Image (tube, rainbow, N blue to C red; front, top):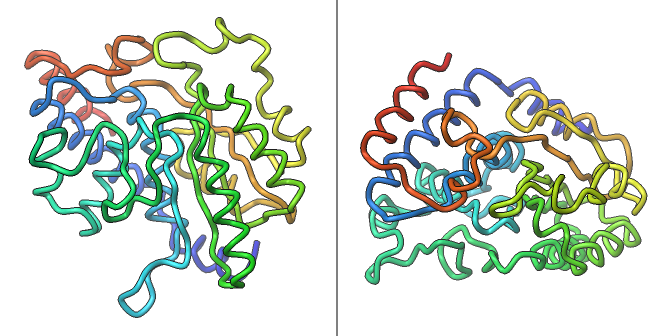
Length: 279
């Protein structure tokens, strides 16, 4: 672990991270009552991952500028959690969020490049990691020391373009890439373990392509943090985060219909009650 990571490890607080994630899920549920549908299941599965990247891994902006690090949400349909964090950080406004998916607003179902805090238009799955490789190579050329973080989904890892990027990243020894797979075992409305059993074991496949690879509980901020800060090699890192689609709300967990749906009023009340009851 380098000096910077040691310093940040002393500041990491798993209880604080858990409280943040609970609040983010609550805000997404609140948002669900303003629109007919949103990608709630996939946002809940990667909440701890995206929270960790923004709040515990990416370095703060220097002198009012930008962070030397970059986050690209390759899993575009998980952007609701990204929007919530960007609003909290003042990069997007509450007005932006209130106008989500309206003709007057600028925030859509998938993130669009040009909006504050959004590094690429994603959601056409399978392209994000290729862009990350290019960004990481540029960062290395500029010698700025920036790290590129990204989150991928189970479904997009079936794309050939993703594996081309995986091969290139390790061949170029791009140690400034830290990627997370939101391994919730779903692609839209079906389990990947049933539709694509040869997909597994997933971690072994990344390792065979030359990536340093580690598996962990994707809903444990402490485990996710340890997976990153405990890295050993000088190549790209892939964290295979075992997650649950719809995590935190019993009737949403591992239920395919919650890929893209908003709860009705009674379902909303139950979800809020369940979140509030969690320690």
